[in-house]
Structures are given as structure tokens and as C-alpha cells.
Length: 131
Image (cartoon, rainbow, N blue to C red; front, top):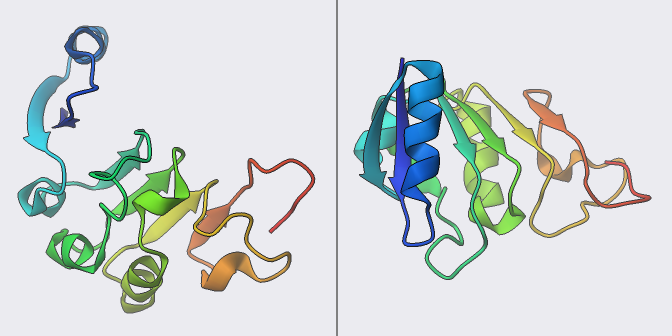
């Protein structure tokens, strides 16, 4: 297995080394928003803060460059993903599915699923609200 880690100034390289050692995986460091990274990824998980350089990092261009059928998991900040781009990629089958517990805007209106179809697992980390 190969783990691809995006290279951000706030990343801790020792964490990458511990993950690789514990799993027996190789680590390849790639720049964020690198289309080549997504072109070989079956699963993309987002675990980064909302910063000017990360807002909208998963947009239509990146999703189009991805290999067909990856899964996207966003557990960090809703504004990292451009919602309309993700919906279009899901509708076309470019992205097979997504698991989201953060949204942009947040919270999504109750009962609407935010425009996301059945290929999305939705949870909420906003107390007292349910999608």
C-alpha cells in the first residue's frame, strides 16, 4: 500500500514517519491540489484546517483530474470542498461516493441532504441538528 500525504507547512513529518512504520506502507509526499496525486488515489481523506490555501482545494478541476471512482472523506472543514463540484462529480460517476460530516455552508438545512444524493454518507458534527 502507498500512502500519499500532501505537503503543508503545518504538517508534522514525524507523524508521517510513524504512520508509515506502523502500517508498513510507503509515504509519498505530494503538493496539495496536485492532479497527479488524485489520478492514482482510490480514497481521499481530508484532515487539514481551513486556510486561504486550503479553501476550495477539492474543486471541479481536481475532481475531473482524479481517476474515475474514488471515495472522498471530509472530516475537517466544509469549505475545503466546493459543494457544486462534488455534486456534479457524484452525479456523473466521476466520484463513487463521499462521507461528510462537515459542510459549506453549515449546517445544511434539515431534511435536504444539501443537494447530495444517495452516494453520500452524511453525519453532522453540529450539535442538535440532523441532515
